[in-house]
Length: 364
Image (cartoon, rainbow, N blue to C red; front, side, top):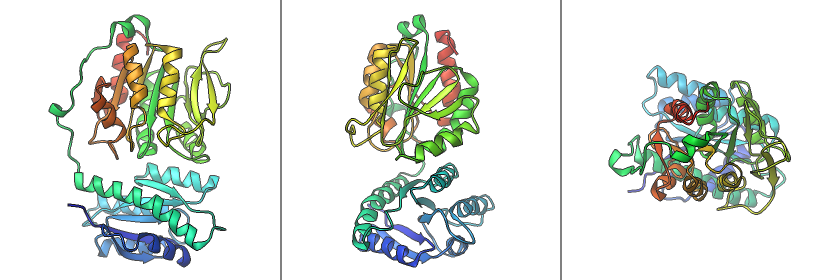
């Protein structure tokens, strides 16, 4: 049975609130339970009514979106909420808006959409909002229906549980990570620990538009031992560095005269994704062979599965985040279903799992 999702619209613009309401109106699985103009009103509302998810503006007077998320977290810890809502952020496509959005995702917002251009007509804005929001909200509703069920051990069939001979004999030269929905929060939680456990370069594809990946790199750079940056054309892949694919572009790795280098391309999206995890993984096969380690974290869809299959065929160790700790177990689950995964682990355990594999491979 489909769940009717109770939605609270939060935005300081009355006109924009009206467009969001119009975009969601008439959907049989969505109930708009309220519409308020700032964070103070939103926090008051969720303490008095059951709300499943907020569409939350990032920038508002009195109490902005980040302050709302912090208030929800505090009220939840204090046991003052009968029902703890999720949040989808509506963000302006500016560096300031992107920075705030990354912070919001790290604080627990489920996902975000970009606010349509203010010069766009009202009817076009409604169409875009409907297309973007419904996908996010329905995935969130499916997650609520699934609850926090874990993926039973009988359903996760891992064909081998020791690193291959190729990996053990050749060592590891890089770590590859693919991630989408829920990624900023997952990366914020995992990357500081992972960077403490290895000096290897780490290459990440996070599904995000331009501007937002630069903000994500800046945010992670503040908390990680490695230097974290957006990948750029011709950049050398070096130890103690993390490279994040720039939004709207593919990032692949190539052989260079002084070692592996990055190439940034505008070739067509793969499975609707640009950047694409598959593009990175498939390029790494040609550069590293078995000398890398791959991870797929939380995310919608199945990007990364084709690349992981090729990497595993080379002898690469492939790890994925488990369902219980994932916001959406689409990408990791697809790889497990394909049979190209060596380990399924909770997010918090992945850095230690990587360290153990690297120790066996003679490189950490």
